[in-house]
Image 1 (tube, helix red, strand yellow):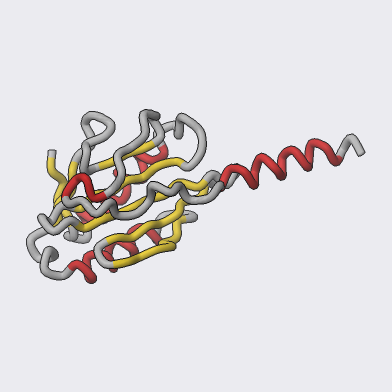
Image 2 (tube, rainbow, N blue to C red):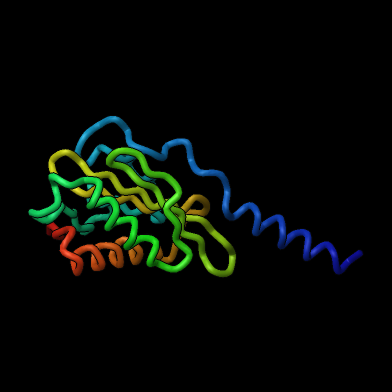
Length: 158
């Protein structure tokens, strides 16, 4: 019986790490940077449109892409799904959402992308649970930015 308690606790903790997607996910109905919800007041979220945290670069579609939002989202989805343990789970109009799952504890982060009408590519990557992510979301957004720049889909805006 004693051996079963740690296994039960670990199972419950691991199951709790994924959690349900937060209600605040999805397009806000606003445009530009406000197209996705602002980050909470915790260091486990990156938002390129609102430049959160300070120093985060914005992204805009390269000149060949603004008139082809479907093709741009296809390229973004492909770049996201090339990342380990990342899967696009929702796509509608100019919006997509992916879930990235950590290897060991199975924490789930939500990665949202919205193509604003002004050509801005708004990316928000946030942990579902906890306060700190040890820089994982910032690294993910930087990796996505690099992949999209190399493929000619976006330009970074300082």
